[in-house]
Length: 286
Ligand code: ZN
Image (cartoon, rainbow, N blue to C red; front, top):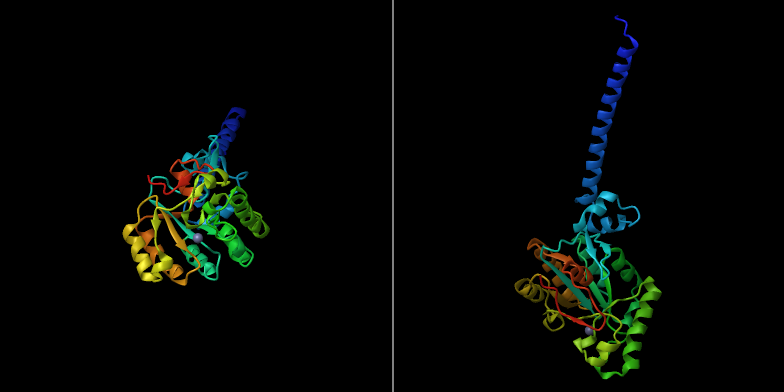
């Protein structure tokens, strides 16, 4: 064995250290890449992904990815936990007049396909379906106000309009702790007085499926699939069994056509629309 001088030993130690650092580097890169992939690809369902997101623990590199963010009014970024892709087609399914006895079944279908919807609920129904309402939130669905007792708001005075919306909101707060932001006026009836006194954006629709009249799952789904366009807000009612069955038929087909099934607010944000109180919105076409 040849004896090494101090210089030789130092060189050997330095070489070992360099090799060690190099291997650590490779190991770090592998872990980083695996972690990043797990975070951004399909290892999570959308629901699990949303549940896993916590603004305070989102890794810095994730925050750098601007496409994962939307912007609010003040230009502040809002996390886009469901990774809605603004350039891909999307629609918002909206369900009025519930919740009802078929709402749970509808949620099962939505969950199966990682889809989300907006529920414009009638206040007086809310207390009967607390489970379904909590589930909506867990699944990333959106709550909307359809008044306390399905009143035509254009026929009410200011006090009546405010009270119809506030009472419904109170019911939801009792069950879920959440307030409703979006408003869908019953019968789509809106006048100047409603606009001035509604404490939220008025969400109308671009496609009326007439599900309550058709009362036939095949006919309803056929109509939607034939007429659907990117950015559409679709009017449905989860109090009818036929509507829920129609969703079961149409949902996989819509997804196959490339549509993202998102909430009204998600679609507005994705299309760069800042929702304003008292203003009517019919669609968010690209
Ligand atoms: Zn209604």
